[in-house]
Image (cartoon, rainbow, N blue to C red):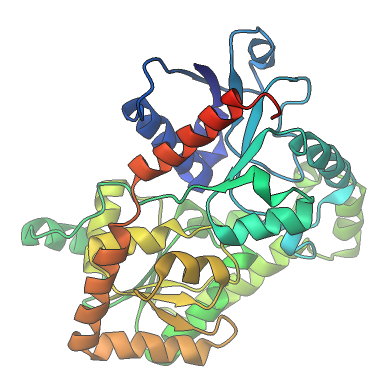
Length: 379
């Protein structure tokens, strides 16, 4: 069995985000996992820059590793057996905050047609599976869920000297709330900033995106992409994303106890998880929520918002707060900060839940989809 896998995200801005993480980890897991297969060859390359290879006749199927409704990510000319991974449909769920523009609308119509040709679709959660059925009109029988997992690097640390060095290097407080990831609208960071202010606990945000908010706010003629942006520029009406970034920056500037660390290595991030008092994921919506599992695997108690995918993956191992209520988040944060007993209880639960997610399981589920597609002449 010979498969082509789209590794394009590893060479783009996705490399340090969830799509790049998925691409790297699933390729590594597939290389180790054979599930009884005597011969499996996986060629990974960027589908966009090597489109001719897809129709070379050498592949039993191809696997497109991500789906963006507003960009052409599914191969257009390929007519063989195709598998597409859809991580989330956030853009379609919040169109006012992620406006597609004219080109994006046209691309979505094309993408919707292309994905319906797929032999199978792989997604991260049952939550996103429901969204795919509802928003893309795909039969649920074609959609298979393959849960993701944290990297092995995320674990409890006993090296006090190393932890002390990282604490000093990043200027971390004795107690703090941690958030890891982008700061887009759906991440709901303004609520978390307010919650930490109410709880009087410093907030540490890790991720390149958060450290570049000021740059994201910049609007000049070179950044304008179409007629609607021209109109916004002339009328001084910011793009919805820029309006969100401005609001977030205002909230951060009002609270001097918010620290933005930017991108950090996995090794340093593991230390930061270990040093954190609480990890919070306040999202309005997630396709999965990997930092939740990373925190649990590192021994950090977790607070999540009451959104479907987060509740789905966390089970009973996290305190749950109303995503619209900073006060509720503040209460849950304070509960964990003030009670060692409660912290220990949720640390134990977190370990138990995080251990159920492994990349070996993800690879096995993915290979099962490959085999089913290849053996079934009707797909």
